[in-house]
Image (tube, rainbow, N blue to C red; front, top):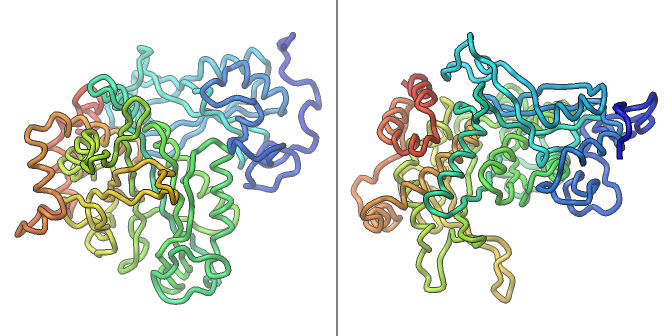
Length: 488
């Protein structure tokens, strides 16, 4: 129990505390494990309870025990990147004020062009204790928390990516009784001077290991760092892309991937944002460059952000086939919604000029709007699920949306996926739509509908389907107007 309003006594805290908030750690290192390595999340180990139960009292006590000097409120701005607002708590009362009340910020700067007037631009950052972690890159012991946004009226800010994805979750639950879980496959290139490992040729690095790739150690550090800060992960590996020095700015580039684990939509979107943040920090510390661009060099594989989705009904994942071999109803709804909204969702998932280059290179990127079991060129795919020899699945079945790339805004993209599920559920003659857009149906179509090949075509698709995105007050009209203006 804290008896006074003094947070730290002179000299309190771990002697010589360095990078990552723990004593003696090198720059960019994951926080050191203390005791058992599991659970993977460091704060879960330190506090002895799962994130959903963490309270402000827990974080205040942690700040005393760990000698925390900085509290960093992190949040996702209108450009999809993480922002920070830092505090040096001067007392227990000040620390509580920050953790419980957050702080104001300038919404017209954070969400420029989205309808927030400069003359009335104050918004509030609201910290979420369950998102707390020790910043592994800070030169001072730093406690970070992710935040949502509220307007001057105290309501969730409509323009905020965090608000939009959470409203999509709420609408989905209210209208269907379902939740939607997701994971992103974060593909990225690492670039350095001085050549590669020992792999030669182009696009030949899939699942390669050291010494044949130089980025393995950094990728593994990213994997552990993300696990320590509470991001659920599935696996990581080197990817097929390899660009030899001389083809792109004198650097050798090799491709890697980190795949998240299934999580509720808002948490899954935060995970992608944090993965990009961690990778950028680690690459900077190693003197490397990292790129999430859809295409780094024409003619080579690009960076996708394939998204796996799983409808959840009363705790059961229903994104696959039932005992009779037929797709379960929520899976049919989601697929039906994605084949209808897929082109419109490119406004949030394929945002770069090179997004269209990636789609025309035929490097396992979707070329037409159809779904199938195995075809990696499909817009929507049903991947194989690993199982034990006795048939027990070790992961839930998922529905893979293969169109998005590394330019994606994950919060808006996943909110759109939830809206697609509701749309599919409400679609008349859904079975005919699924039959027509299946791989078999597309094969018998003279000219299957192709994915957009220009920003103008994406704008047409978005304008056509904006009602489905605005439904339930999820996507604000001002945001869609701004996106359409840029596309056109």
